[in-house]
Length: 406
Image (cartoon, rainbow, N blue to C red; front, side, top):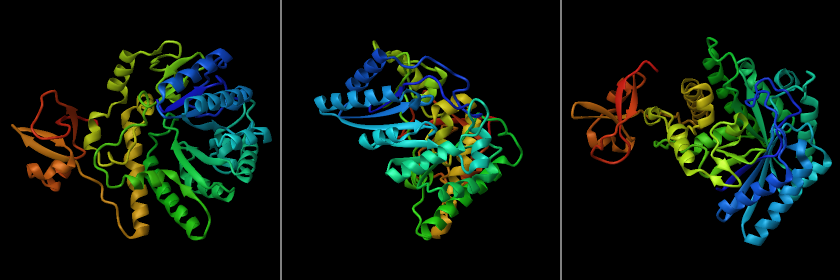
């Protein structure tokens, strides 16, 4: 384990309409469980460990967070391990004391802020219904002034998607330097006609906005774009986020889950800090949930998409994959247009052996004398299933079968 999430609080002071945790509320993590979680995470790590504080809102338990970070730093010093910290927060409970702690432990902060007041307060409200923009924007201002390592996370729904570029521009005006954008894929409205075309256009506009701001000398980086760009020429499916392998999250009661999103839903428990991970449960999770979908090898954006097993399980692969197939080409095409080098999606590679068609890694395409035209003719009309029988050559093999999933 190199990435451990600690679910120190089981509740939140906001009632965001799109929260993936729903109305979950649990007792906070007690001192004994917290120390046990820390000992377990450090014992399972190699030379380095990243600790992320989650909530639902971790600053509801700030004294415990302070104590845990101090204990972790001391244990790491004694064992010679490298340690780093992060925190996901809505920002409404940030004080100067919190900022001093962030500075002391060099904490990387992910702050949820969806745009200007009108957009942000549409979904991110206190339990009484009042908007949280003022408090969150104030925290952004103070943390930026103090030099805290900060990423602002903009979450959007089908309702707010038409104003994505406007929201990003408003955040830039507030001084945001590093932006991450995420869809609330479990929100209603994704079947609305035209929603995917709208999102593609908004993503293209945000790429152009990033370029415009950078050209003007303003420090602004949309991190999703950089991630896609780094893997633009990759043809093998990307690995997933590490859920259940290098990463895990420990809930308030000490139960170990593959990640903080699974922990919020209490889905796929893998073990407990007192007894460790059940390897049979881990293997079943990796096999049934975290492994690449059979369709991944044939997907034109397989090299850039980093799968989220929790989102796929929550909303279904059709919606998740539609989002990736819409946004990744939009981003890369817009970035390449600015550079004068249009992005070409990778077609899937297909070979016929013993009268059956197989999808194979693109780098083996030439071995079987399959043309791009033949590959593209089948793309979007077939799906693929992993075959049990070994086939000649290298790489993963998938048999193509009829399906109405596309």
